[in-house]
Each structure stands twice: as structure tokens, then as C-alpha cells.
Length: 164
Image (cartoon, rainbow, N blue to C red):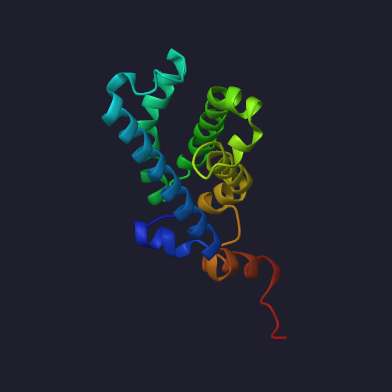
């Protein structure tokens, strides 16, 4: 997949563009959340509920989330494994921090903000990561049936296709 950004997006199947858009929205939303927490509480914004290593990780997401959103927006293959790794760590950290509340009141999981959307988004990222990476790298099915040059190479090896 070469060329400019517009060409890279145009070459992708519709489902892949949709997945990339959902990724971008999800990671930008995460960046905004971390920005708000740090703007309100400063470097101690997570101190009330997270141990120091997780506070550092959550603060780092203020940089990682927009970086992933940019890589996704540029349809770069490097963004796909990075987003998967970050989402697994983010979901695990949120489960660790929220486990006491979930253990005491399982309905805590069903809140529309918190563990439920993070967990669902993580599962979505993990379920779509491999097929999306194949398409972005050019190893999967492309929009419009693929690269015309590869069809020409195939036709030279097997002969032209007869009209059906």
C-alpha cells in the first residue's frame, strides 16, 4: 500500500475503514478522559484509586492514546499491534483497579462508563486486529478485488480468464 493518505484509505475495504474509524474514536476518547483526569487532579489525579505503577501507566496513556489515533488515522501497520497491546494493558489495569467494586457489587460492571466500555472496546480491538493488519499490510483482500498488477501477473502464469 503506497501513495498518500487518501489513496491508502481508498484502497481499504469499507469494513477496514470502519474499524480504523472506531479505533481512532476510541483512542481519542481515552486521551480526552486522561487529559481531564490529569487537568483536574494534576500528577495525583489517579492517586485516590490506583497504585503508583498504574498511575504512571494511566498518565502515559495521555501520550500513547493520541499517538495510536494518529497511526490509525494514517493507516500505518505499526499502529495495529500497538493498539492491541495498549488496550490489553489498559483493560487489565482498569480491572485491577475496579476489582474491589466489582467483587462487592457485580452490577458495577454494567455502568455505561468504566469497565464495560473499556472491556468491550478491548475485545473489539483484539477480534479485529489480525484481519485489519493483514489488509493494511496488503496481505488481505483489497477493495475492488486487489491490485491490478497482481492480477496481470496471475494471468501471465495461468493464462487469461475466459468470460463466463
